[in-house]
Length: 317
Image 1: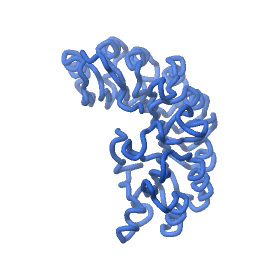
Image 2: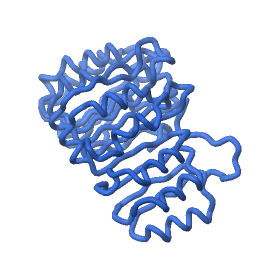
Image 3: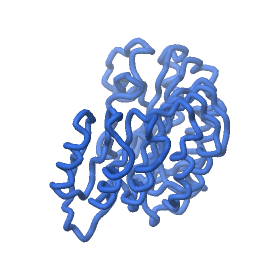
Image 4: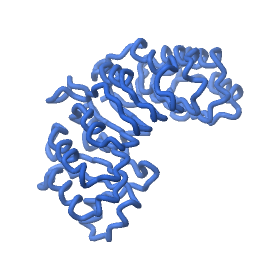
């Protein structure tokens, strides 16, 4: 996962750029065959809301199952408030919507700290059948509004939830921990750094590790953290791990200290996959992991130098 390029698949469907297809004169596919991306280019004379209306008018939206929201700002950071209102207002025209990705925006379009996100609770209350939600955006310190946020709620059908941020506020984690998501199978947080609003602590992660919440959970991602070693040490003895199929501790400042804690903790051989990409492990420790987990797909790509004094998370600014 990266913010360097646009996603090509979402919710098991290929992503089709609606605006590009219209401008190219390409015949539009069957509505349920793709994940529809709607966004605008920088300096576009057409607003996102206008493009969204064009999408609603051109596509059989009653059969659309997945939507990807791209750039909505044509001139510098702009609040998601207006686009969100338009998406919520279209709920009756999108009865089959099951997946929504908000903010498929690369760093060349807008740094992640400039993606002016808002409270996304209304997405879940307005779309009660939604199964997958991905939100990419910033904390309030860098934007006009209060920034990325969520309020505690119950949602019967949500199966996958991911927050991508260079600095995820602890309040978002606390809201998720206080929510009731009985169908949730996949949960991921890009925790980020303090400079960009990432103010969570290990105490904020504890509710996701004790195994008492989210009975359907099979995948957990606690990623992109400056304290990845401490997270790994906590995960090593976390009750939730025993029922996971996959675990993601990637994108952060993981060193031999954290990886050793994982190896000395509870067994991980039941996992299908362990993602540790973007790390600072020595070659010897990487080999220990591979030998200890022969049946697990361990991702050790994007290795940084263990001797590097300036270690950094994969996504911050």
